[in-house]
Image 1 (cartoon, helix red, strand yellow):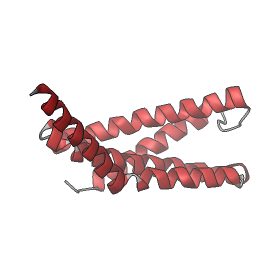
Image 2 (cartoon, rainbow, N blue to C red):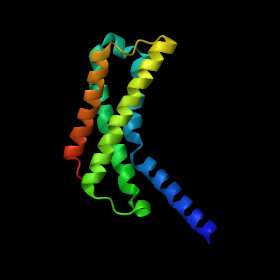
Image 3 (spheres, one colour):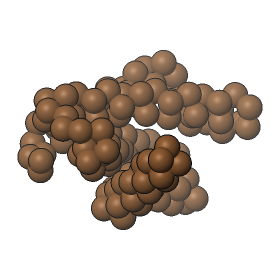
Length: 143
């Protein structure tokens, strides 16, 4: 019986992940695609202020993805109150923003990129990502 329950749980988790990816993975992937395009054409070197909307939209879009992920998990984990879902998605976005800044610093340090323009740039990037997350959290009402 335990094997059957494990298999059912595994199928639910797989379905949850695939459904969420189909529903909302486009959001963070579109910002990431723009970021890669910008790197390819030196957009951020030629127009350093393009970093601002990129980080803001990154926070906005990754929060959209996390909100979808959390909402779609409820058949597996049970009902999650809306304020908890919003707070959890916001904190996941903050963690993602910090990890992204680690990535930028690692690329600079070990591979000679020039993605970080100092501590002020890093703090501003984090603030912009969290601002995007806050805007989505305040105005996105899908339950």
